[in-house]
Image (cartoon, rainbow, N blue to C red; front, side, top):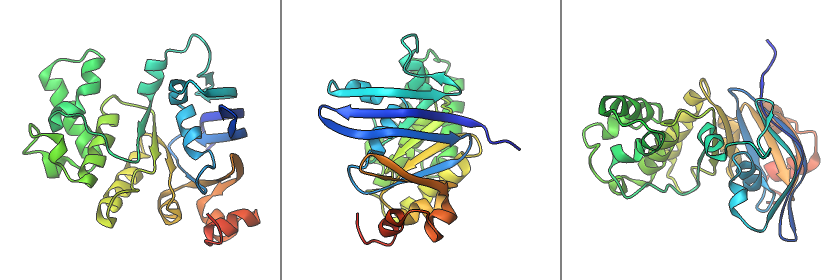
Length: 253
């Protein structure tokens, strides 16, 4: 079976003022894979993620050259609906940011914005999203309680559920477990492994062991450049570039 390319970049360059954050990036993301992105700080990992749903547009110092394709369509064309793009390409950030609302209202915030107001439909959406994020059993009896009362790990899974509620096609994870304990991290990783059956996932992580556990393929970024990308087991056992070996073995980064 031929792999389907979901996202592709061609000659992608990103600057923030005088800082050249991402340099001539050519990368393909396969549909329904988990692509892990590893590399030391200031390697362009988050800049790459934020280019995929045009969040870099919010930074007045940002400048982009090159192309980013989603299902073969250049997302930087003038006629692209950025709101719809961000619905299709959701993002989960390092620190969970629940809205100051109930658990239920957090989940259905997006669907309501897109015009869904039927309570029965919203309830179904909330349940499905919470189940997919491995959170339903923990909160089903307190959906009307403030989301802020959840633990950090639960809040992160709530943010995953909130992203799922608008039915994206791609989910971008930017170090989603950086502040979580091992048990909460395991639950987020378990959710990711299940979610890839339906979604395409790109995971930026500073935890190389996490990339090794969940990634189908892994890409190593260094100083704004893609050094190599390959199947995860190969990256971690016999990388092609000595710089990848040096990072994975802890000699730098």
